[in-house]
Length: 298
Ligand code: GDP
Image (cartoon, protein in one colour):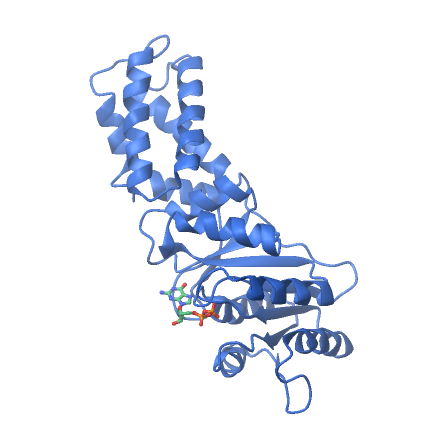
């Protein structure tokens, strides 16, 4: 993934047999290699800086264990720190005590929100929930129709604006959708919202208005993994503009290097809960920090 990070670490410490501690010169050599690999993988610079500082500190502070050689020891430290920065344990969605649990999706246009809404609904259904989708993205002409299609494929009902009933007013659509879900006794309601191509104050305001109207239990920030370290900047804007409780990385099938995942978690300290890995509804998985760390290393 990172052009094989563990091989790069091993090569940088070639020939060392371990007892005692690694020397400062050896640690600095391998840390330089790790820094280069992370930058090659398009990880945001502040995240690279903090990550390598932590690896350096631990590598200098730890005795090389008898069971491992120095390179294996550093690989283990890097693995631990990767898991840590990616959130540690696998994150969980929080469900409301009194249903329905309201999940709002936010993110830029094209991030994969509408696709994700269908995937999440399908997954929820397979877990025994009774989700409803709400089409509150009225910005993109085709978004409502697209949500209806993914809802049909997922076998999940979609609340969409009807003529004379909130057309053009996404806040009203979101509110009506949530109260309809409550009335029809759905235990989860997933609200799709509008994005723009870039960060835009009007979009943020609309997302805030929807948030304030429906009071979501979870707000998921959906972000295209292909944008690499730029994901950190977009995530910060959404964190400050709307706030979110968890992240969904979409198009992870296209990001061979994991730069977006590390950049986002390093900057926002919000867990990545799910990954979208293709255009099909079944291309969806829970995000496991330890598996991602393995992918990055190997
Ligand atoms: P939205 O504007 O945020 O609602 O984004 P869409 O859900 O419409 O997705 C934008 C484009 O990305 C569509 O062509 C989707 O088929 C595609 N897409 C969404 N998620 C994924 C994914 O995980 N992998 C790939 N390869 N494409 C995806």
